[in-house]
Length: 102
Image (cartoon, rainbow, N blue to C red; front, side, top):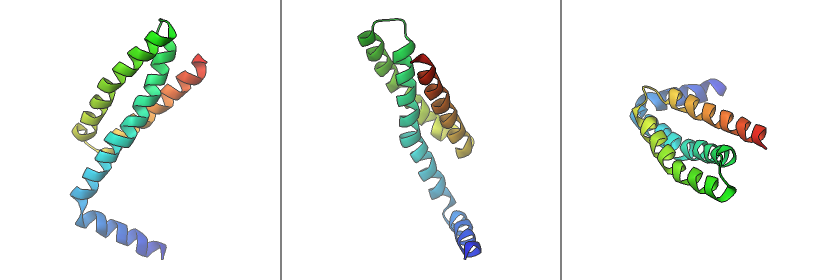
């Protein structure tokens, strides 16, 4: 049964390859970009050398530019795997920085 599901996924990808690519990149841009942006904004809010309100406000304003940039990159990258690797790396570094900053 495992072989049949693998064959089904392979044939589905071959039939609807473009659709799969668009859905993958859209999810990367929306969900992955949001998670990466939120974790980076939290890190920025903690490490910027300002008072708490100002650093949080600046981090939130920068987050819109970061999310837009990540969304553009999600569709401009050569492969969807590169996008997910970048997003996972950003999230991991940001969360490690937040843990270290507290």
